[in-house]
Amino acid sequence: MKKLTYYILSAVFAVCNLSSCLDEDPIYSQNSSVIFSTQSNAELALLGCYGYMTNSAAYGQMMQEALILSSGFGWGQRNVNDDGRMLSLEAPTSASPIKTVWNGQYKVIAETNAFLTSLEKSGLSESVKVQMGGEAKFLRGLAYYNLVMLFGDVPLKIVASSSDGISTPRTPKEEVFAQIIQDMKDATQIAAKSADGRANSWAAKAFLGKVYYKMACLDIDAQANWQRAKEMFDDVYENGPYDLEPKFGKLFGDFVTGSKEAIFQLNFSITSTVCFNRASNRFAPSQSTSGIAWGTYRATKAIYDLHEGTYPGDPRIELTFMKSWRTRSGNNQKDPKPMIGDVLCANDSTYMYPYVKVNAGFEDDKKTAKEPVMKNGVPLVDKNGKQTPLEHALKLPYDLFPDRTNPSIEVLNQFKLADGSYKTDLAKIFSTDAGQLKWPHYAKMYDQNQIGTASHKNLMVYRYAEMLLLMADVYNELGNTAKAVELANQVLGRARTSGLMPAAQPADWSASLDQETVRTKLFFERIIELAGEPGTYEMPRIRGTKYFKMALEFNNKHELTIASSAQYYTSNNVWHDRVFNVGKEGGEGLSDSFVKKNMLMPIPDSEISANPGITNDDNNFGY
Image (cartoon, rainbow, N blue to C red):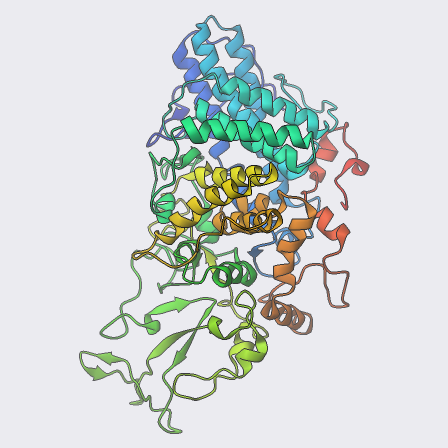
């Protein structure tokens, strides 16, 4: 790292809308020679540490983008580039998003290390040192958790350094977890209440529960860590300030603050050039917002159908997946295009999977519409006098499929429209035909009113619903399956009441379910609840290779996905799906080695080149 002086300039830091973010990249490095003379100077430096967790190398972009890319449930064009290979679970060690995530989390660590060193040398009061130091350690613990979750064994650096090229080998994950635990324990000594976007003692306890849970899943002193996780979760559950929001959708509104579900969140600004949230720019459909959106990455058909098929009518479906929007004439357009007729209809809007637009049919071979679009009570016609047909949004007929989670091509090939006519190309439209409208978008990060590339969104990094589902797993592992079901049913109950009217699904689970059934249901429920959030990467992997393979099988057994992937190898058109580890000449499919490899990301080659302590032979399995 560069040897810059450790300046603290008040003009560099800003707190925007109670966010901890930076107006610009600070003149701020790992040289810890400065000793804080006042509490306000230390506060500015601490805000800088928070700011690095919000910038584009961290949760402002890459900790959302790269994690969905590599999750197994993200879709993007089948280009042979870094993004395309990550989406195919074939990430190269040279992938830029992976390098950025690695560097972004180590930047947080470097800055918190420097801050802690300077804080300790200062003459500030012990209470200030406990509070500010605890917040910094929470951030460092979070950064190391992210790194060990994504990369396994990673270099452990807890001392400020101003030198480049120091040889730092990978530290066994057990030692990294020990440091995370110590940091979080220290953070339990800070205040119990905090402003939005700042850590508090309850957040540290809830995160400790997650750390112990993760270690137990990795078979690190499993029985003791299941019990430790229970103790932490019980304390937060019984005595902490958190609760579920009554409505699921309230979690993803504009600049949400004060949510009782937010265990730890990061806040952003639309005026900052550094700590703005770029997720809507990357994930929102092109021409769907007032700003610049590219719709680069989407959800796979498989994860949509997992949710639709498991819980038909679940209000979370509409809040998790974006399937239609009013059409605009391009990016940076304030308003959508005018209505075509007297009322909103499919003619005015764009529709994605599982919908397709069809017109109402024709009376004769002159293509005169049976059911025309009406404007002021008069059929719309083109310059040749032909009527404009009214378009309808036709949804896949899930009720007809033997397995609602896996639309059947055979059923689709026999599907009839309501008037009795055949729509024989329905399977073709969603499988072998190339085109942009075959995948839904993740909706949680969508901001219709985004400004340029910045959205009006904060981000809950860890929320109470996730804790409840992890806590349920802990109780299940410790033999109290009935309590596990009770905890899960709290999350399901909130989901049912999140629409305009109470829904039938997701229905409560029976208290008589056996342990393995509950373990599996909890695994998939976490994937459903956290889809389109950073947990999209972690949740399929958190219970190990057996369950990760089960998650990926939804993709590899999905009939429309299989047909689309096969068509790619004959057409070479990038608008097709992926069957993992099966190419033009076939392949192993979901082999044990493929699944094991994709439990972790590769150590980036940039780190191997810069760090003499790591060689190519030290990389993760399969890379």
